[in-house]
Image (tube, rainbow, N blue to C red):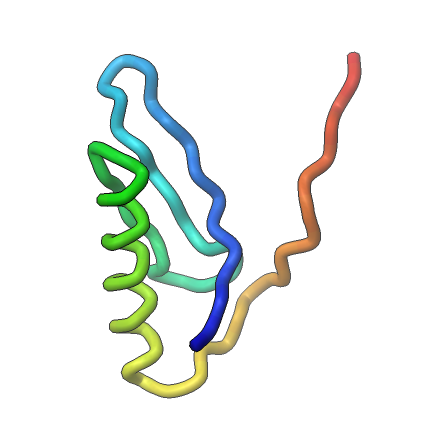
Length: 68
C-alpha cells in the first residue's frame, strides 16, 4: 500500500472540498465531504498508478507559516 500527502482546501461558499497531491499531475479531486474527497483522490491516484510508477514534477516539502 502506498501513501501520498494531499493538500485539502474547502470553499466556504459551496462547502466543497478540493484536494490534490503536490507534484503528481492529474492527482486532484473534489467532494461534498472529506470522505467523498478521499475516495475520489484514491480513484484519481489509482488511475495514474495503472500506467506504472509516476514521475513527480516536484517534491512536497511541508507547510510554512508566513507572519506579516
